[in-house]
Image (cartoon, rainbow, N blue to C red; front, side, top):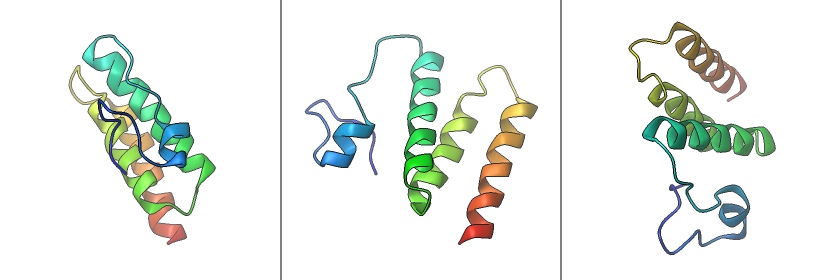
Length: 85
């Protein structure tokens, strides 16, 4: 699954899940992206790629150094993915 392109998502699932990127700071855009990936993983819990990308997206929102809460959230999601699959 790829982030939205300038021409817009190609598949119906991508169009539903990835609206056009919003304006904002880098952190705001990354946070929105992480939330979108979380919603995708909740909607398609068997999608390993969505879960893995959500985990990575959570980690990219640690702009002020190591965010323990974000690391724990990403770790818990990773553990869920590994346990389920």
